[in-house]
Length: 356
Length: 181
Ligand SMILES: [Zn+2]
Ligand SMILES: [Zn+2]
Image (cartoon, rainbow over the protein chains, first blue to last red):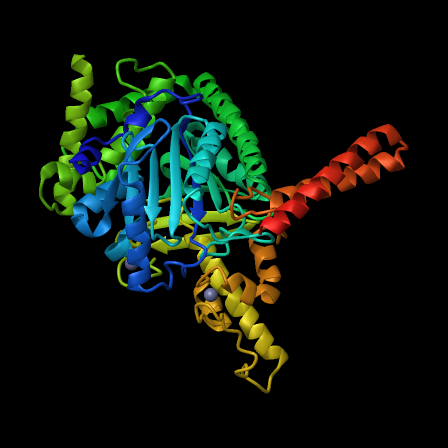
């Protein structure tokens, strides 16, 4: 049963591949929202209509393959345990929204977990495609081909004036959300990222981080994505995003060098302290874990630490979330139990690398 | 600081987003953040949706202000013939009910789309092969026509003649397709 496969490993097979600029860009994603022309959107459609859409995919696309993505597995939401859903969300294979309307929703997931096609989310169809590192162009090209492949069998809701029609007016037009996940510890530490966001917004792009207590984004991970979907072509949107991300990469590299130059010993100290915490703590909260993992990753990128793989941040950020921890423990855990499990899991994972 | 959503637990998750120069902040407890998906999926349009609902409410209030005597009469109440969604319902939820809604509410959409999409109201991206029908050809035709105009203005008549021939052949393709449809 391949659901088990999706559940077992924290990082998807595609993430293990190396991508361009992967010292800073963790992943590139394209999402396309599409709808059937003659069926009400899932936001208001009846149970029967939702079921019909689901059945259509089950019949037409089960065990279908598209190019390099071997078979698609149809994962029905109503057949999953709560923890299983959570794990799929933590792996970004499905959205939290999809799990809320479980009765008639599903996701078609490719074997390498690079592609997932969500059925009856906010729109009938959400095509989602990930690439490792900074590869927006490639992601767009393949998403578009996948879109063409679906369009051979589906009458899309499309209008000459408004483009692809979606349930929410924020997605109409291209229906495309392109985004890049970036690790920007130096820009965050020096507060530069906050100063840069207004300029980025002017281009119709958004920078998001998740902030815990204090001003630092958790894990120093930021997502840059397009806000506008109307009036610009897909290629133009991706090009705008591309140029901004390129600049952020340059700035981050420069900021890292400046930090090293100005306060090298402090940075080195911070990195090794965090490494120590990860290697030795017995209780660790998710926020502290995220901070330390970000430092560790920076330490790898700067060459202070060389026996831990670059993917460790990606992997442990996913693996130490509540769904995975509980899946791994095979039981429901309280927050404080999770902190203990998290610490032991991280220790175990780092130990593994040291031996190799 | 208490959680904005449940007003029960302390707010421990703080999200900030800058959009068109406007800063929006959300302060919620961890549980609410998880329930709303803030913790997992950075890309959820949550703040935008909040803005949108605010925007619609604003517009509704505004139009009511303009006509102080009446709540919208049944006649004024736009309703999608296909799915039954009214404009009021759309404004409240910020979500369309079906593809037909776009046509039903068309007159009222431009100001909304303009604000959400930095002034844009018309699609300029991909055209699907089948559903797009003749749109590919029509767009090509528009391009040729403006090329032709430019070439004539620049007195490049040889090139212009070539483009004119292209237009003729496109025109006949469009006619043929029209008969097939
Ligand atoms: Zn709350
Ligand atoms: Zn409708």
